[in-house]
Length: 109
Length: 118
Image (cartoon, helix red, strand yellow):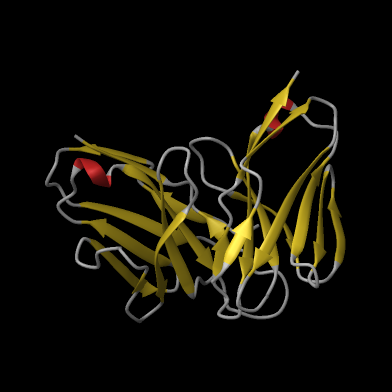
């Protein structure tokens, strides 16, 4: 079966750095996405990786290793507004998105 | 960037009422639209996938006759919750994807519809 694993919850301090990991086992691979979802709101797109390596976008970076079925989202200079759930999703061979359960990130002052 | 508009944002109605939710892609042609449901503190649950001009594909456990999906054009899909009951109360989110091709084609989400059935 298809499976996306990410930690349920993480806590970090304002101004610090946090890394949210995601491992996946899917039928085919056509890219990995990270989304941010604030409570009560719809997800918003953060990043996309299809090749191995690091993609940097401001304070957020995302890494992919296809051979290991592994990705991480790195958030730097954490702000209180970064408190949200972070969803990892993999697009399979049918171009369907397989969603992880999300990681709830709690930022403390 | 790509925008998906979803209406209404909130619905409160009596049990037995049918509710229609609209999802529009504003600046791109959405060949595929997805309907999700999300209960509090839970992950997104895909309900169905609809391709323009064809019947929707429903996920296991989702009642086709209860959740009617119409994707009549490349910019509009609708979800109708028929004879809604309190257990149908949830956050419904639509998502749209453009023409499949190379490169980055993320799904773009509407703002969601919070449905409360009394």
